[in-house]
Length: 179
Image 1: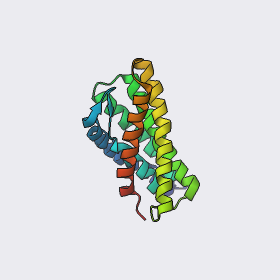
Image 2 (image 1 turned 90 degrees about the vertical axis):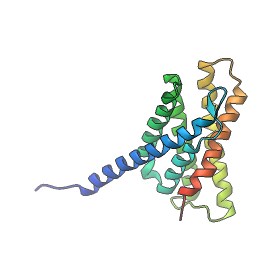
Image 3 (image 1 turned 180 degrees about the horizontal axis):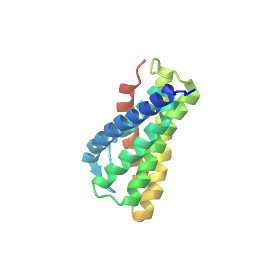
């Protein structure tokens, strides 16, 4: 007797479609953010972080792997497309992925699968999760950039990354988090 696994095939295909769609949206939003580069070569607004966090929050834990792969690849490609050092592009890809995963994971832990922005308390916790995810990634960016450009100001790097990522999440993610 031959058994078919349509659920597995559909799940795999869903994940691939999600990764491709998220990767394209992330790359395009990242290119938009790269229009506003400042020293040390970082964007002041990163709407791509809102795309990835919003997709993860809206779709929940089953979207983690496809979105993480898409964000890593798209973020790395964004960095390489502007001539950024390959090692730094890969590090930024990892940090952008980490930020989105941490932000979505915190909201999932605090509210379960049914997170939305229906009241002030949830909005405040959304801001808190965004700040934590952005702060962790910003700290990683300080380390990565200091290895490449030791003269860069750690405080400036942290503040730029934190501000750009936070602004990106709070402006773009709510568009994807619908109830």
